[in-house]
Image (cartoon, rainbow, N blue to C red; front, side, top):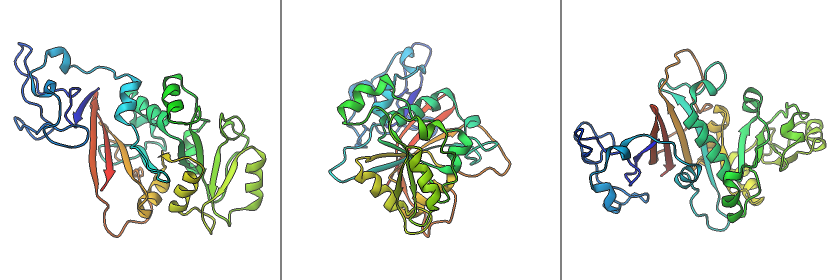
Length: 302
């Protein structure tokens, strides 16, 4: 894995002749186009001298980043009291498919799964739609030793909470997701959701959180309800309908998108669905990593 943007001492520069020298750092600006050095804050000219100096051939090769390096690269911003941060993690093919044969796994890679696990390891809560729970076979989040010290220092529990969004509550409450989690699973729904199904969820050990006046949730209320429970570092893994709701409500702060070097054709869903927004929302690129042709991008809402 290598960093393409922002330019840092972990960025592979354009390789020069076979003597082990390298040319100026570039980030996709076209052959021979130099891009100003930028640090992680986005300021030009603020990076160390190792970026602007020639580097050896070994420094240009891909390598597997440690989980600590990935965790640093994807760290949540510092949040003021009462603030929350909602990021999404999705994968898309080159032709815009968010899944193949109903699942995202065929579009994924080992590197994508390491980032997937890292984002989970950093989150307080994972928000996911009921259809995605059914299709992807969701299980309780694990406690991972690699993130234990980092989570303890941040005051987090041993594993992220999973919050399932459902209007109908048409879920199998006998599954381990509800009966065997390290921390109780939340079910986010509306006040008009079927009362018998809500009672069944509670009987299975889940906590039912009302975040809307109708059958479904109101995205802003869901985000606030989670934050009130101390779950401020929020991660959603979709599916497309749920992500579309968050986008339409203007509550998505960050998009972590893996661009898979695959083409699927067909009629698969995009990563976000539902009604369109009146004006397209703009996001700024925060970082781009690359491995084996996969681009791991991160965008933040302007």
